[in-house]
Length: 115
Image (cartoon, rainbow, N blue to C red):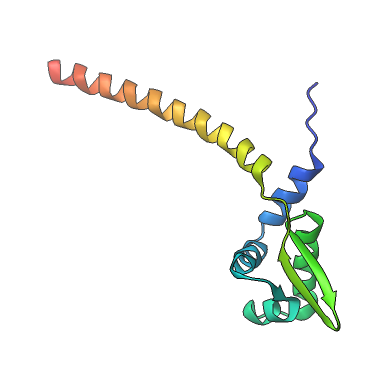
């Protein structure tokens, strides 16, 4: 029995499965932001945004720093390279399969024209 376990992948893909969290990452690409600013941009409560930021932080995608009363969020050091490599393997597999399918279709078209 094959068992595959990668809690890091689980945390990353779980964090990225939510549109709000992906939006938060996109916001943080543009610059650091406080949780309050993020909550306002996404029209949600501070508590709701804290939960999203916590999930991103647990995945290592975001780090937070408290300065005074403000908690600022910025992108974490993880760059999703392992996740991107994992996805790339499957993209290449599907690209090869579609290429083979294109060859079969072209061959069928040629045969059809000869008739």
